[in-house]
Length: 126
Image: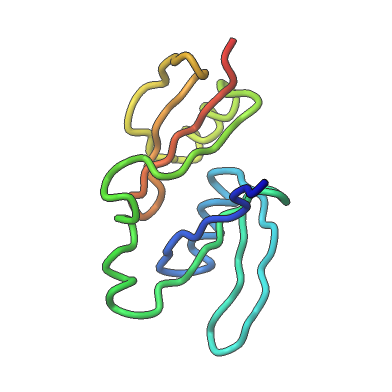
C-alpha cells in the first residue's frame, strides 16, 4: 500500500517559514539540512508526515508562492485538542479566515499561512 508522506510548499525564505510554521503554528522542525549553494532540506510536521519547505528558486516559482492551490484549502492539520490549539494559534497571530465550525468529521477552522495558502485546522469529532 502506498501513502503520502510529504508534500512541498513553496516559500520565500527558509528561516521566515520555519519561524512561522514552528514558532507560530506549532509544528515540529523535523529536519533542517544544508545542501550547499543556498539550498536546504527543511521539513516541518511530524516524523511520518511532513511539509517540505521549498524555497522558490526562479521567477516562475516565486510567482506561485501563496497560490499553490488557487485559493482553495490545500493543506490540512489535525489536532488532538481543537479548542486549545485554536486559542494558541489565534494568540500567536495566525490569520483565521472564519470562525470555527462543526462538521461530521470534526471541528474545523480555515487559516491563511504567511503567504496566503489556506489550511484547515481539524479536530476530531465529538
